Image (tube, rainbow, N blue to C red):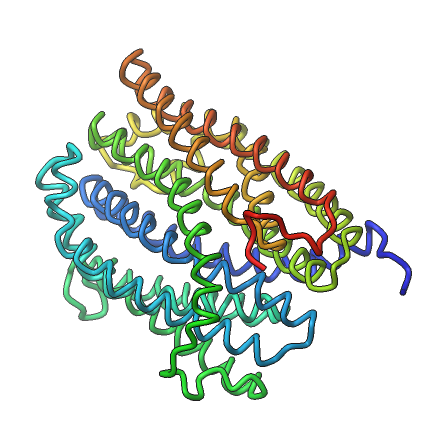
Length: 458
């Protein structure tokens, strides 16, 4: 056996895989950021509708992404074992399950206004959000298929192409938003609906890009040949791993979605400020997600080789990198609060001062959970790499909903702290998740990797 990798070698390997993934996630974030900034220039009420619409879309999309997240460690392990047939079977069934999920969710998007009104949102705001969701509800199909193929490519350490395709899509989104939201270049002025159609264009561009690359750069996998044929054995395997991942993601994104609903109860201005701060914190979170994806690939490779030492050294290396990112983020959020929030607002917006005041306070709360947010998503990535998904799902439900959501409501409304109280609940939920999941990973990492445990998928 060759000499074990040193920590600097681990960090270089993680950086090689992770930097393009981080760039891809930031480019994906740029798509949402562009939507938010341009809609903020268009008006505060449309911005609030967009925040609600993207919140619902994100809940469904990220839950459906569980099958794509399952593909990544499974393909990484199969690649370590040099099993090309398994790579093809796993990826195909990830595509199947994602397509089925997207189809089943269409009614939720189409009839979203009554749901939002039942959750206490203003009827006019709910109606505008539904306009957005009826269009993006169709776009969720290509979006989820893109996620599966990106996960397949990332597992094979083909991460640079993921970055470039996402960057091109972000550029297409900016141009389409500029044309369709404001009615530029002869296009109709569509407001919120324009942002939705821009998102549709982005997903189609992305899907064409990843399919073309997978077909022509990796012909040995014959990924799309006889795609119509089901493979129930592998489908069950991806399903058993993907559902807990999807439910874990649902628990986390559901906490943030519920916080958006609660902020909507406080009014349009607090909701708009909340949406802006979420965009800013998401930028930092995308870096942690990229590191988490790299950790999943490296852990999946270690799992395929049954090398516990490789797993532990790689995990410690990526944790150090994540902690450095969190520290830098805290400094930036606390130092440049007004300039960061102000770039989302026009200079003559009558609500600018109020949004700056509320948003500045929320940014302080956001800085508090940076370490915890990085720790929990990193632990999830490592646990997925060793195919441990069921216990983390239970931990997520307890942390995000049992603790975080309950605290957000009690502090925000029962005790009357408003927006800062709601965000304190986010801090509590993410902190609890970080502690539980990191403890789970290190306990699992001490076991032989040949023993996946009762809560894992092998």
